[in-house]
Image 1 (spheres, each protein chain N blue to C red):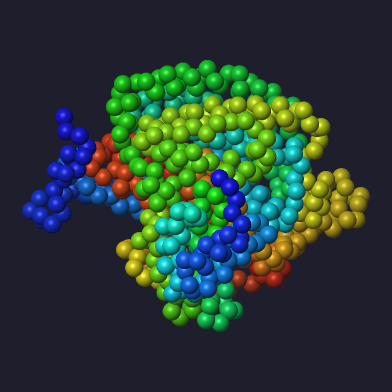
Image 2: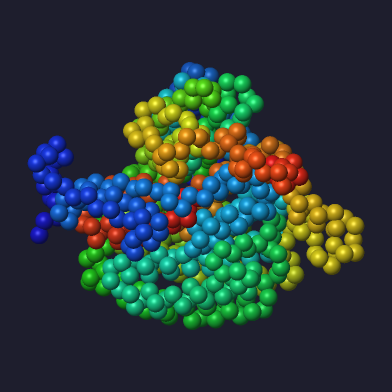
Length: 408
Length: 168
């Protein structure tokens, strides 16, 4: 059997026009793209000679809209970036604003944030890995683990009332304390999800068909990955142990004990394995965070910053200052300090950064989202060159490209 | 992984480059520098190759529009990063609105390709040497550069919404 490299060498040269290539449109709406983006593939038989991506089909001008919104109204925009793990985006945005304002949040809020962010990371990785199974032909595992993603959404619902686009938390903390059901459900999740996930792993990780489809498919060396701006699990699958949670700890991640899984060749199988291992690490982080929250005094769920955090409603009716701040915050009349901030969090698919320029007004002067998958999706043609069409689908799926984040 | 001080960076850059680049550090620990456009490529290339500082990762690239700065209306902001020392360096260049030409970094960073296309798409910055400089998120037929401040977000003929009361 010929290897991929031999096939690549045998691909006909484009300056021989007598040999026809086929052009294949994969997308914009195609069941295998998992989102609205298009790939125009130049095919030689079933081998890919060249691919070109077209993105922007769901561009919603978030950066422009953000220039006219007070800070708290931008949170719902961040929900819609990587909508598979919206709480991470929300928290990333709060951290950016808190950095600009100089707000120090209590430890308990940090731990609460870690708990929801790690739950979000698990939900995101469940989606990515189980859909990778679907793309290789294993639908059952996907339907089996998906109920646990639903369960995570139920926990979100208890925390903030929403499921997908969560708008969870506020600048300075959370809108309310976690109730008893949140901890109850999280305990149930920590107890009952691991055996299910173990079963799912057993289904795929040593499965002959799955391994044949994914090993040596869409690999990238670490140098190329860094050059292409890879971050997150995709970079770690190439063998670099870079994780913002340890490199630039935010939200008191330095208080937690966890490991950073890395791969070796950066192929689809490595990405799958790295994400699996991250789920186990995140489960441990959720448990640690929950214990830390419960060890601290209940009822602390926001920082003491009355200019930016809405006062309790009872106070608004009785207290003059509370009424004033309530009005000013809702109307977006609080000016932010002048400054320039870049703040990043480890999103589920890479470094999610916010570059905020404030000129002292009530809205950002400029807000730029560093969306990880917009940057690493550029590498896709190089990753699939010389490979089969069905490999391209698997590679795209394992890169975890989310259309909402791609287009902002 | 050990932190590097501002003086070390400044000395290191001065000893290798002679174009008087001044680095400063802001309150959040990020290093900043503003460059003349003709030094940009050389400076970024030097950082990319340099093994001491190892600033070899392009985190982010975006444009900013300051309509009031005469002949420096459009800024391009690069966020560079050293994973070895965990430091971030923000490099800014400013160009005139009439001739927004900036050298492309695609020769150094593969990741610059789409980010430069995005900046072109929204601010009209011409990246010289870019292999495929066309719009990426907006439609190809679009005439304006929509992130510039003069481009209105809402219908300017609306009378029911008074801007100074509600947002910018």
